[in-house]
Length: 353
Ligand code: AMP
Ligand code: MG
Image (cartoon, rainbow, N blue to C red; front, side, top):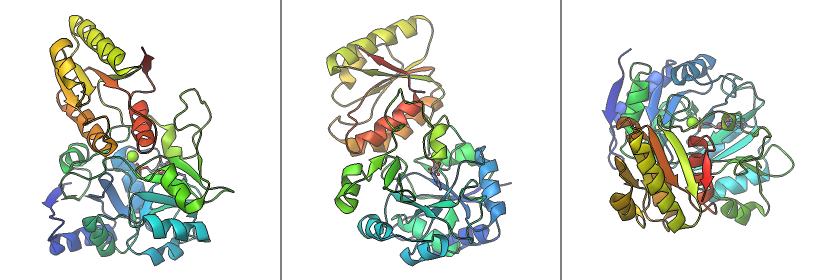
């Protein structure tokens, strides 16, 4: 299959190309598209064959449900029942935006899309191209992140192409995404609202609207061996090819330890990458001998860190780095999502110094 890549300018989108992308979805094909979080791999959410194709293209286990993307609030009533008051409040506050809400599904949604579950994950993205595309595709687009299962989610179309070339019909290239980490997932199907995956919309933000929101205890507790509530959080994820270790402790101790580890790894022939911050990058440049040192931004700017993390992991893959050391970050606010992804990317390999 030939994969067509079309550049889309969000300010003046090529509506013909978006209409063609919509037709591909309606005929059961697959199109990758930009959202504000990461690139999505879209298929018709109401067509079981499309969902099967998404799993096949990603090499994703078929018990890992897909998120259904909509472009009009009222379409929620076609795919979810009941729609509780809490869902309306969340939608009012955060939609369109980087929040996924889990509700009980209607019969319209095939179980192939929900990984066999009776619940459905729903998101209304704010990205203009995504909205136009979902509308052209008939209003219900199932889309996981557009990466091969296990790899970091793509934040640029070139990484979608690297993973999906020859596997899907089209890629809409809207440039680099804004947020860079996947949406927050909150489930409203139990007694209390609960966060299944942290993201840009934080617990504190949700609690301003819903008063009390729980967090799945497997999210940041490295020693918790219970099964995460979101099936997708059980799998190895976001992993670069190189062996990633997070080093935590005081910033001085961390930079010193990373420099030492990097020098030792260089001595055994490894190609070393370091995930640094603006505050520390020059120390590594002087003392680490690492092949590639990349700053995710200032430690005080969580948005910048979230925005660059996956891109940097992908760049290390391109550079064939074999060993990566990363500083650790605060786990409050959006930092909870950053640390959650970084810990998974590292297979929970953390050294405290
Ligand atoms: P991705 O599309 O790659 O961002 O992954 C979607 C995430 O949403 C995975 O972690 C899924 O397990 C989770 N998810 C989707 N639908 C449900 C659902 N009905 N119940 C729980 N988690 C879900
Ligand atoms: Mg994913």
